Amino acid sequence: MTETDAGEPPAATTPSLNPTQQRTLDALRRTGEPIVFDQALVTDIRNEVRAALDHFATRLDDGQELFVTKHRIGSVLDCEAHFLAPDEFEWTPATAKGQVAHRAIQLHLGWRGEPSPVELVNEAMSRLADEDRGIGMWIAELGEADLADIRGLSSERVTKFVESFPPLDPRANPVTEAAAQWPVSGPILLRARVDMMIGKPAGAESRKVIIDLKTGRVSPRHRQDLGFYALVETLVRSVPPRKVATFYLDAAEAQADDVSERLLRTAVRRTLDGIDAMVALAAQEREPIKRPGSSCRWCPLAESCTEGQAHLASFDRT
Ligand code: SF4
Image (tube, rainbow, N blue to C red; front, side):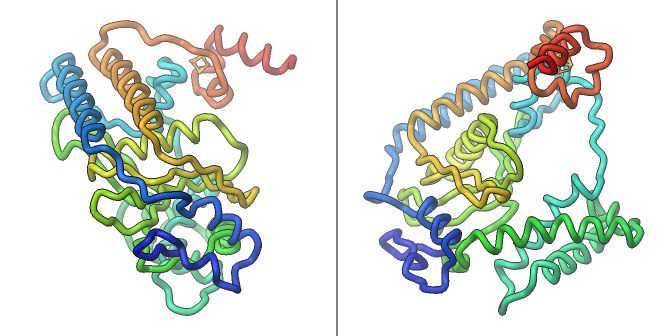
């Protein structure tokens, strides 16, 4: 998939696209006139977030730092008690499959010829194991059965991607795991790592499409996560993306939204609400608020949480 100077993806006329790839292309391609956001809007958003971060920073102790990610915003707005609970994350084949698959897709973008998904996953795992950090250290220690498990799970994901996406033209600057941070330094930093970004910058025209790859069910949280990505991209590059999309691999379907002033302003409000709560908890200004909801199902505090137990019981009765 690529875009010409006019912003039209020529892959639409490529005869070898299967129906799913064509549907993906139709969901992500530009429709209508080129989009150029008013620079006054971008400046206003940057100024608003900058002023809010400066104010929040005055409530933190000297040396206290806050990293703001889509996951942390969603978590603190869901239930503050859960947000503060010890992180029980551990690598397993199921939790590792996403990162391995993303690395394999990254290799796929630059690979000449037509490598099989298993070939890509094998190479991705071997490269990750060579990296002396994070998931790589964990993979390097695994036995054959766990390696086979990850290979199978990740290959399934890569296969679905390859079958669902049109070939991505390098001229459209497709990147996976694209990292962004704003501002460059300070006690509060917004950080995003986007599954996939496509689109070549062209002045102030919005051309980029941000894509989050998901398995499983549609959730309202997915759209909110994309709003955060669009906001960080706007803060970093001063050009909002053109479109944001969640691609559901199991259903082979993209749910895409055009980026608008409303989407960006909503993302600003939600992000600042989340940071406000994080700061209040970090500075111990108040007790964490419990908000029973879907996160009770995987909350490590659930057994001893009265509100969570009541919610889970009502959930079981429905
Ligand atoms: S069980 Fe539910 S309400 Fe209780 S702390 Fe966990 S997420 Fe919050």
